[in-house]
Structure formats: C-alpha cells, structure tokens
Image (cartoon, rainbow, N blue to C red; front, side, top):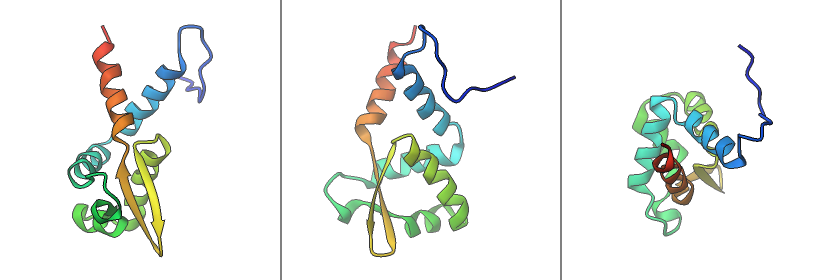
Length: 109
C-alpha cells in the first residue's frame, strides 16, 4: 500500500488533512499520556505552569531522545506549543486545536 504525504481529492478537505495529522500524532499511548499530562499542568498563565522538557523525562521515565521524538510529533501537528528559555524548552498544550479535534470527531456520522 502506498501512502501519500498530501492527498489531492475533491472529497478531502484541508480540515480532514489536519485532523488526520492530529489523529496520527495521538496514535501512540505515550503521546496520549503526554497530552493528558500537559492538560493537567498547563493552566495557561505563563511559564510558571508550563512543563519543562526535563520534567517530562522524569515523569515518564523515558530517555531524553525517545521523549524528544514523541514531543516533536505533537509539536509538528500543533498540539504542543514550545517556548525556549535558556537551555530548557517549556511546553504548553494547544487547547484550542485539541477542542477543534474533539468537535471534528463529534461531527462524524
């Protein structure tokens, strides 16, 4: 089976493509757990409540490289937003995009 990176069809919308990208990002249990974890930590009021990359490694007991690969997928689809400060990266959950994904799923027949 051949997988195309971009599908061109009059039946597939840009929204369909974006939602498929998010669904793909959420197709691994660790990434679902990361989204859930950030949703409990991120209160939306600055770096004080953001989650640092070293905190994720400690919490989930995965190597830094493994965690970086999974976080990159969540960043690339837009679910995680990143702020760099010094040598650390702080992650925020893009709640608006996550809510769009939930709404998309609710509209499915």
